[in-house]
Length: 351
Image (cartoon, rainbow, N blue to C red; front, top):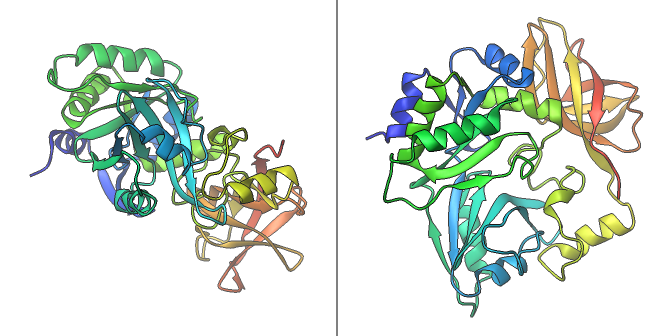
């Protein structure tokens, strides 16, 4: 049986599809209109219930996670909400999370939704520490509100639904800078999330799907788990310095991250692009390569169609490439007919 939040979203016209490995709401009937509203600052609400939630409980929870992730969690106070990335020994992104420090536990909101994978990594590095792991994904959801009045809209919805799940724990509110896309977010039980969606829409908020959020990410150069943040990328080239503590000691992948930063070895940067192509040709897509003068200079990671033969995109562009160039789009060694790409903006490469 569907939970109440699913029922509410279906009533609003949700269309679901598997995107980057997670079942998400891609739109509510008109992705283009949803995108226009979201980018323009109109109050919009986005479903993030696909994000997994893992609780790390025990006396050593913070110190255990401190030695595994890029963020400084050892002395984080109760109530702290911080972005934290788990990287491989090669410094590549495994999991993009938000760490929520509570009394006796740390919650990890896993942006990519691969809860089983995150739990497996935590178990792999668990030796004698006083910690235990619990998957709470089915009990909680994140409600994300965007727009110029997002904070006020979220506050009103929280107040209006205070009795929706009276026995639940207090909601956890995220500062809009935690992810960097301007969204006001709160972690609540799924029962309360359903009530909040009703309250927000009743008060005039517009439902928006993942396609609209991707469009916003392109405008604001926000990388996403499974797209820009994956096993092929490191956090520095994705512009995620906010999730890295350069003062802490060793963690998995720390030497690689430190070396890239100290010696300015980041060889590509996150960038946004505008794409046009022949209407009769294949549409450019994520994983297509960018070429200039016969050289591979980048890759597309997120593509959102704008017109019949045009799109906006995120991707990576090599630092040695001329950002003023026009790039070809190549798939499996063959250029897509008429496809022309120009860079719109790139993430800062400051050290």
